[in-house]
Length: 272
Ligand code: HEC
Image (cartoon, rainbow, N blue to C red; front, top):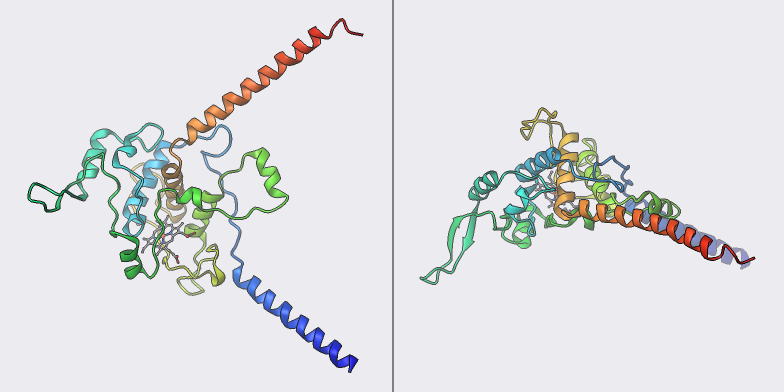
């Protein structure tokens, strides 16, 4: 009797472990490797030429499916971003058709876009995109900040000191540049963190699909880095200001600590 019970227990445990193992296996997406970005670290800043190239990739590739509702055309001419000229942005906006109105007759009407308009999405709403693509592509306004991956103990403690904040960009880059493999099914992505790694987005990039005018080689790797930098700027256009303020605050605190130290020394100099 006892042996049976023990056997039963063992087999129960074994099945439990097997279940846990398959669940674990299915869930395991690869952890993105850390990339080097100009906007990383306390002196981080955007590379204007890279943002301009990234915008071309966004506009010609990603924007066919993804929206970016918080991005206004005029943002593209702001300092610290791609900083296109105002004339360029005006011409760009005019290429898009915006629904406006109602006019005097009470009807909505179409007109060419203006710099103050927000980005014009290909699909009017997520439902329409889902109906065509099988899943709704997430809006890109804050995607680079909204995505990331678990760093885990003890690495995240070191990250506090190195100021690592690029989990989102590292994830996006890995997903679009490295995640697809020809051997498995075309919608498998090694970095997509759902069980099985099945993603509704087919491989979005291939070499030479977007023209670069500044001599940068038109490769998947460069497209992925550039569009990721662009999306990071879209998600956090004030990153440079934030880092500059942080640096100033730290310098101030250092000087202030020094002053306090000497003040303390002076005040207590006669006390023995
Ligand atoms: C053919 C349409 C299409 C194109 C083009 C496309 N995407 Fe997607 N994308 C999708 C869909 C659909 C999803 C949702 C996938 C899902 O939920 O399975 C998605 C999801 C994503 C995700 C989100 C993964 C997550 O964590 O939720 C990222 C990041 C992404 N796309 C980046 C890009 C970038 C960058 C480009 C341009 C280089 C691009 N996509 C081009 C359709 C597209």
